Image 1 (tube, rainbow, N blue to C red):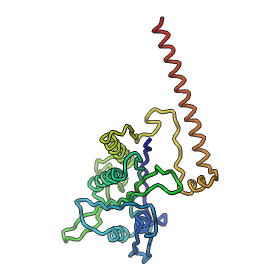
Image 2: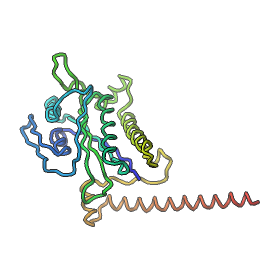
Image 3: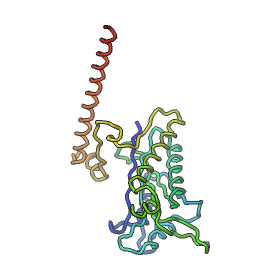
Image 4: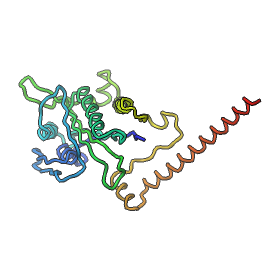
Length: 272
């Protein structure tokens, strides 16, 4: 069945990352960083099947120009130059539908927050789960606008990058609440796509606790642990997930047993 996954993280200089290198790797392209002079060339990378750039009001800007602008607009050593969202794409949908789904989501983000949104759709890793279709979505941290002079520029920080104090002053939801809305939006949009195509599967953005489930959530392995597990090398996260799955399996069996007992009680009461 389809698995819900949406995670987000900033791309910042304090962690040694740049927007130009990040988009070059995710999109499988070559970009020269005008600020540092470094050439980031990932044109030989495989597994990237589609890249699409969305802008508010359909502003026309080249991908390399955009992400160089994101770098040169920020002046501080620890500046945040982009934000990345990673989503799992349901394998139940065909390639065309998965593309349409994630690009509809990206367009909504671009129009709601006034930012540029760059989408890179990836195939599952050759050595991993062949159902793991996913997309990397990079957002500018500032609004993309056309100035009176006609020049396209990154201006004020977007809502997603404001502090909770700034959000409160503008009567906007907290950063945490806004992320919940984004997570719900992805789940709702995905479920609409499934329903329209008569696929009897839904995903839920809520945590196990919010859904009242006794099951424990597993941990995301990450690429290093995933690679080790594929080679047969046990990792701490892998061991933890195996224990969680065993626990959840036991809880499911207990739930089934409880239901059977309850059904028997109801049958006896009806017989009496």
